[in-house]
Image (tube, rainbow over all chains, first blue to last red; front, side, top):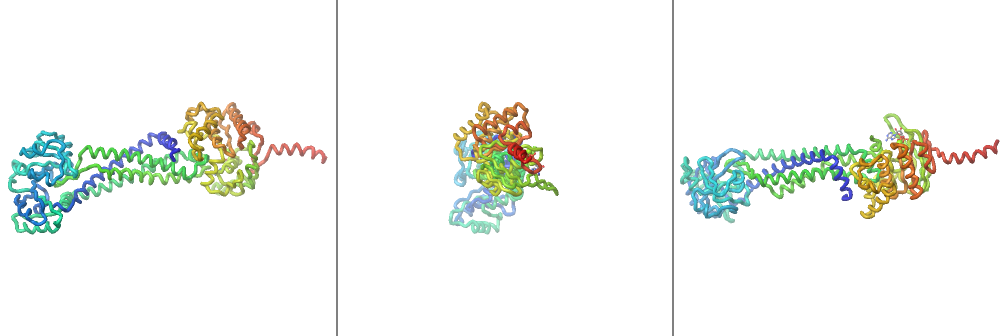
Length: 378
Length: 241
Ligand SMILES: Nc1ncnc2c1ncn2[C@@H]1O[C@H](COP(=O)(O)OP(=O)(O)O)[C@@H](O)[C@H]1O
Ligand SMILES: [Mg+2]
């Protein structure tokens, strides 16, 4: 087949306008497919997190702004069997609704951050953070999105923070958060939050059973002073994002629709290419090209176009996802749009499959065409 | 005998009508012969040529080329057979426009088990035979009509096929260019021993061939043999008188 490469490539180049348009169309389709796929992946990552972390929230509350638990619940929970660590967290967000520009502040006792998160400071220092009350460490995507540098002071509402560090994390959605000192966030002007927190994050050891421990915690506080609702972090995040889940499912179908559209587009182009060359294919067959070679040539044309579009679309999508730090969030939980090797491979393999699917019918038509009729064409 | 055609009939169905351009045609062609085929337009000259070239199948009858019966073999084996045994020269050269003269001539070789060096050697010989070695890297649109036809001829002979068929190879050319092409074909036949079957409209062109056939109303008439027979028949006839 390699021997026919000059013929193949020159044929595509001859109709470069058409070829480029089809490649571009396919690239757009694959870009959308990858983008939507990354949102889906981001959501799956959030909702399928391990069962070893629980979130204790105020019962019947949904937005972090309305959940208020006594901070000293951590003492009681900390003594329960199987509990390794309890971290009281004050959450502050600029937007409880689903939004593309959510900024989420997590106020956490400074010394506990490194115990429960695997953050890597790429700029700044832990000392700087721990020794300054108004200091915050910001995730890399927030920093990029809001153009935050070390030492920058920035504010959302009444919260005014100085950037003491920028971190990245193996959990890409963490990079959409800003971590501050707990008591700093509790003392935000206009809010009377000292002594209360939004939630407690409970890290379990290997012996603990998530469901049993959750009931244990909720039973403990059923009688008050504030009733709790404890779930695993995955379930908690899934319910926070409930509004978005259906939308994301829907957009997933949009991704498949793009693939369908791309198949039609390439198939149309390939059919046109075959119809333009009925006589040429008859000439080739007269020279001794067999049905299978003609079939393979047409199929290869279709595959080259779709894989070309696939490489461009997937490439641009991965670069965009890596560079833009986009995310969507609701109720202080954000879904990060991030690139992944799996997604890139899906895109490339998908484009190969599209090329084959789109090329089969035109290729059969070309291979089966009557030689004499083809030669008699003007 | 290189080509043996026996009782060949070919019909086409055009709606309710059946056209039978070839009716019970038989023909033998020897290796190394240059045969021309004349006849009015629409009498089935191309149809006959296409049966011999193995790109169309007869309604009935047999064709053996170099002792291979080609009317009964499968479409895919027929394609392989064509690649190795037939050179086809079209009326309009039918070169692939995106390929250079060199690449056009090389095309049939890609189907045969030749390595790159062997292909190159053969393409050069073929282009040299049609005196176009200096135009190897030109595209068809950069060549004159006569040059394009010569590239078409080079493509037909490059595999050194058993038989070369030409369907009105000078039909689209002016008379000076035509005679150049005819000289070339004659030389291929005499110098390389290529067996040639050429369809033509032009009596002068037909006269270039060693043997002239005429197709009329579905029947094949061997004009050269008829002349021989006539010249023999006359004295015999006289004897009768
Ligand atoms: N594929 C075909 N389908 C229908 N009719 C055909 C086909 N090929 C040839 N014919 C008919 O057969 C007759 C002979 O055609 P052809 O061999 O091309 O004639 P020639 O080459 O002598 O001019 C014509 O009447 C033509 O219309
Ligand atoms: Mg004809």
